[in-house]
Length: 431
Image (tube, rainbow, N blue to C red; front, side, top):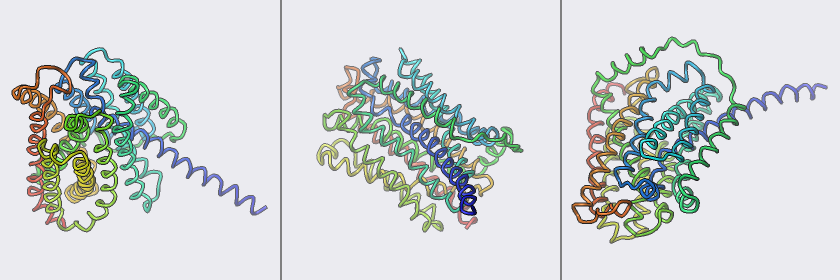
């Protein structure tokens, strides 16, 4: 009898634990889809250009629309999750992402494409904040670190799917069918999440949007905090532009191969990004007393790796060389984020780290969004001056155009060197 009573008491606990992992899985899948949406343009570039009779400027607009939508929702994201709970925010986020994905797949013109991607981005912007909140509420403190790390890796899984698998699917079924399918997966995950996520009581938070904005304005009055935002914005804009927009088209052009075959280096990048987040993130704990120096060194290494992708070097050393460079770049990129997060916590303290994350992410989105049209126009303009920009499509970008891309990415990396210098004095005070 006692054994039966013990079993009855144990079963609800097991069901509660199981439900916590199922709820986490639902939101983690949403984050993987969001990451896939962010870096998917590189896998559809050629088909997109052909369907809309556009060039690199059109692809730049496609990428820019996502960055602007993502940026607009960053500051209120934490407040919305605190006010309305994880379930409500996540369900609205999933619905917006799925609706936007379907609208993107059916868009008849570039204006509709821009609007659809804006909707997708506004939905996706809420997911990771909600995921971290869910981890904090559902798991004990001793599990928070590992579950947060795995949560970040779930996004990289979506990034992996956006490389070789998506490129192959686009080749076989077309990009529109692929994004309809992504929308359907999102709807199915929405139904799953509505069942496994617990209904949250409305949080009685004293925070208001005005208070968050006031804290953000105050934080921007300090030079060190600008340095932190510059460091993250430089990293995010450079890495996302290369790995999420122009990586596959560049490799396909270098070696005259299909987008599916060209996605292999980007697949290596995404896998190594996940590895770098865990391995180098753990190693970053040892750099706690020299965060500024570590950030400068890792930025210089990233710049060196990007320079190694210049067209003459890539042509001379071949496909395997480019794959190795992308893989090492993934490790470096994965190890950068933990360093920036450590600086954010040191500068803002634990009480205001949400404001710090919002400021950093907003700066990154603005920088990335503003850079895309400049990059696209520069690539097209230089290619035409070099005599290979007569026709539309991927062929309108020459070696000169992709060399210009590398040069612009190197210039965009410079704030990543200046930022740690601005943080140095305050980081030393906080130690």
